[in-house]
Amino acid sequence: MKPRLTLVYPSYSKMLGTNKYYRYNVYAGLGNIPERPHIGLGYLSQYLLDKGYDHDFIDMNLLKSYSEFKKRTKRYAPDIIGLTMVTPGYLKGYKLIKRIKKDFPKSKIIVGGPHITLVLTKLFKDCPEIDVGFVSEAEQNLVDYLNQGCRPEKINGILYKKGKKVYFNPPVLEPDINKFHFPKYEKFDLPHYSGIGLYTSRGCPFRCIFCNVESYRRKAVRVRSAESVLAEIDYWYKKGQSLFPIEDDNFTFSRQRTIDLCNAIEKHRYPSIIFALGQGVRADKVDKRLLKKMYSVGFKYITIPAEAGNDKTLRSLRKGETIKQIEYAIKNACDLGFEVRVLFVVGAPGETWKDLEDSFKLAQKYPVMYCRFNNLMPIPGTALFDWVKQEKLFLRPPEKFLNSHDLDYTEPFYQTPEFSAAERKRAIIVSDQINQKLFYRYLARKLSILGPFKYPTAFMASRRFTQLFLIKYPYLYKTALLLRRKMA
Picture 1 (cartoon, rainbow, N blue to C red):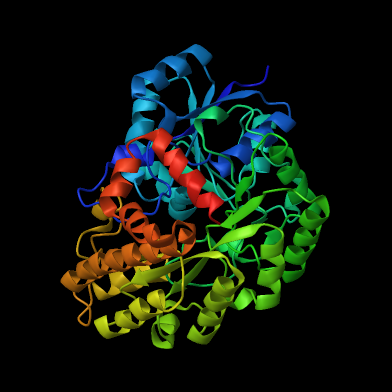
Picture 2 (picture 1 turned 135 degrees about the horizontal axis):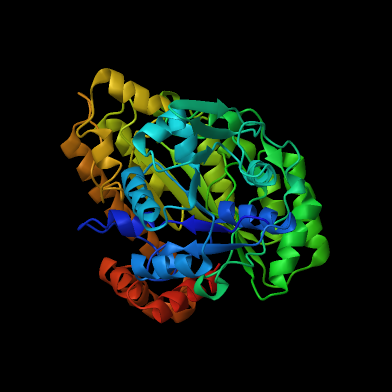
């Protein structure tokens, strides 16, 4: 008899809480409406179903309390409970696992996600209640594990223990990701989400010092075929979805694949379809011709992670791009009509307040929709973390800030002699003021049909108190999102 399995998406935001200082945001990722279901767990769930393994799925973000989770899990009576883990909030994750194991002692606890790849064999020391850990992508490895009667010895990409010994079988990534059918979220409560996102590729070969893309996935960028992506778009478009957020690390890495996909979308002629590149595209991987092609088939929102305002800081971050390339990409995107968001980080090694002023200038140079500045967070497994640790620059121990409510990036995590903690905190306040100004200008441009009334309307709509008011009421929040999309 096949084992009964429950997949769980913990609510790390609920476990960590929120800071008293609210960042200025632009109707994005806020309120009581979960934006999208977890794509990684969606793929895992779909592959389990494709291979004949029925299961339950619980998104703890949709539950009011742990008692709801306990009742549902008791009713389903799983033999295996699988959770995903991220490093921010990992101690809270361990605490949840301990609680689950206490309530369901007969169920095996298996875990996956970025944190497992980071800690590897240290996992069982940190949380002995865990029975098995999956490293990197787990679709095939989890199915192999279940097919082998939950015996881990011959499974790739797995951590397991026998007595006091811990074993690690390295992962072998599937080169053809088209074999993993796109998720249809049959086990998810889709009406509780605002839509679904797309993964059209996996991996990132670049070496930014703050990024913890695992070494296994850095080796190659693997892309889905245009036909595979189009089948997913077609499936959800026919169900009424017209906005598609794309969550790739490097959507335009393969220029030809991007062109092929645009040609396929153009051929199908989807009325009113919109694609949003919220995860960002590298400036050195787009030019005006490619952007023009993308815009013509529905790509309206684009994020450009500039990260810095001069070449000195870009070199420090190991971005592999130049300010000239970044400005060129921002200008082209704005000229073509994209709704452009620009991302920056604060506090790169060697950065000074004067360097940051270059970032402030760049943020305001072009007619972008808004920008976002974050204090750099040193995540274990990154070059940044190793440098901060070696130089003894932490303001608080990593286990403290990685498990606190400071993850809105208002509080700095480290400081340097040339850039103090006070300056870093001030930088976020200044950047939020700039952001509010940018969004006001954006709304004034979009509301030109109102004539002279566009200015007071844009002013009110761009105020921080308006943002905070909207996120309290799901209906108003959805309406604001809809209006913003219609202006694209």
